[in-house]
Image 1: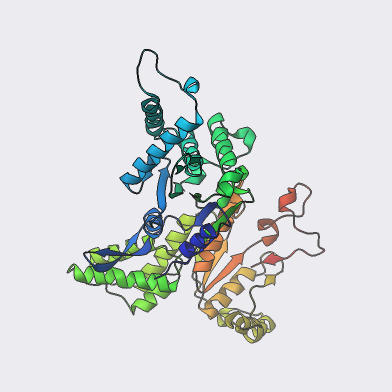
Image 2: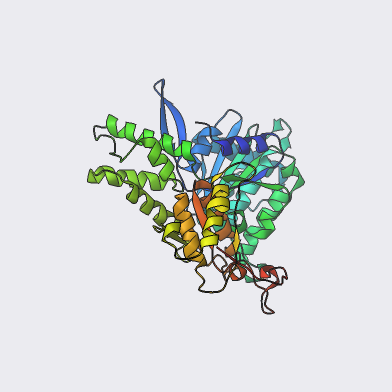
Length: 443
């Protein structure tokens, strides 16, 4: 199965449109990969870094991996040797003997001294992210430098930086520590350097949201973003079939379902493959049939864990329009106009509705009945505006990703005039709603 975000990323880097790429979205999930072992092609599911390393491990490319909780790593040990030797030769050319910080009382050669400095910096980088970023920046300088015998490093570098939001956290510059500022300035100089921008080396920053990366980096015009979407129906179905095949091959047997695998894939909309894997393993271990209620409950738990209990609430209303007392004309309108337009997918489809009326008039109850008529789950959006700096953007990005993965859902935004902005004098400019004579309450 082809993975679109890998193709999109490769296209941007190969064309030279950008040399710094932000991979955001569903970065903590599992991804399908096809590997060959003894001439036999086998499918499996791996984390994002393993997928990128496998996809971009081609001739002429050296992949460098950095995680905040570990050292700088190379995909192959021979690649580290190549970079180390090229770095030493580059430093020997760029620095004269009088500039070298030799140890007093030693007879080491210039080359061994440069090698010692590199090795010390490389090992210290495991506990110092600022030093790690600077060392990788210098690797890129070395990669595009030319010596008397040609380029110091003939291969191109692809540097994968995981947890970029932790290394370069978003915050007002006046509230950042000295070490945070240093890392921001290193990356700003690195990614803005014309030599790097016009070179052949690339840096991929991995973060759940671009808005979580410091704005001095994320807003650089030369940086582009590729979003990793949540698993769609086809991806979920492929994983379910893969899981059951592995279970059958191991002798455990496939997971018993209330219906077909296709029905499970449809109902599991919104789950990551990690969450889907967890649910299937639980059902297999307990030797129970996986029913609809269990799947809906798992989807509810997962989405609330991603977006937050205080942000989103699930409802599965049971009452129908026939259960409403009164509202005769309104029920006729809903049945003849609104529900058919919610159900259709043509140009006459209705994406939403603004509902106004007095408090306690039954707006929410009525439209819960509409959701029941449509056979949809109700998502109630509650505290979608955060008091923390930059957190509202992250909430909306997570919410948008979840909603895109869901198939049939009715979204309630109760008291929308306060949820999506205000009109009072004390409301901040970014949260003010446009002036209007009549406020409405969206449901």
